[in-house]
Length: 186
Length: 151
Image (tube, rainbow over all chains, first blue to last red; front, side, top):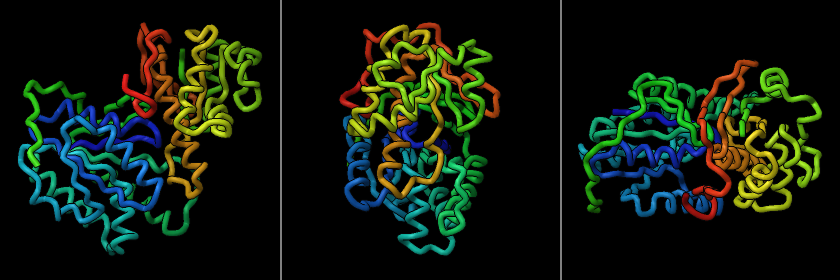
């Protein structure tokens, strides 16, 4: 199963996504961090997200690109929380110089989804600042839009988080699972 | 409290006037009024301008608490706060701009538990995103999870 969670900057989408995983997960919870360490600000963000996840039983895998490389570390009962898609695409384009970033990312996501119980992808709303980007950023936005369109089609649930408020654009709000989470083993 | 959000120039101020019945004098300008005057206004226009001013005096992580401090004074249950959506674009290169858009979001997140309604205006059309009969009271003050602690 695939869930896509989106929202603007500071909308509370990360906090919502973690809460969402707590609601739907039955087996292991695995956090896939795509943000590369680019200096103090990204470290602060990584630290803040680590603090938010502390004590919630997440196993963290850091994978800035090429998601298929971690598919062998995933179990069929796992719920995966991938954060986030804008970083993943940026890393494929600028870190990896990937000529086909969209298909590479879709392929990686498909492998993860096929090997787990539920894949939750956090993305961002980047399309509303009204600025016309003609350079690499314009191409980046275009590719992000392609990923959003394809993933939203594929996903069973699409949720937009607006200042902590979830809006279910596709699929219904999940009901809490009865089973207790297994303790992380790695 | 009612939080009215949406992109620029979508008709948020008109919504305050036409639908919520606020007069021009009841709407306080967050870009120019002294902070201490704001609690006496039923309408605030716009929260993002207030956040920009507060960021000149406080570090970003303290700004949501400063906003709550002002917003929960006076007749806050009848207060209507307008805020531009500024967080749905490419992450700006400049650090202060990045902090501004993220802090505006965090401030709205901090206000939501105290609202009876959150309305998003799109081309003059309102969509109610949240509607509750009993919002959180300031005495049950929630601390943002991005701030000092957990609720």
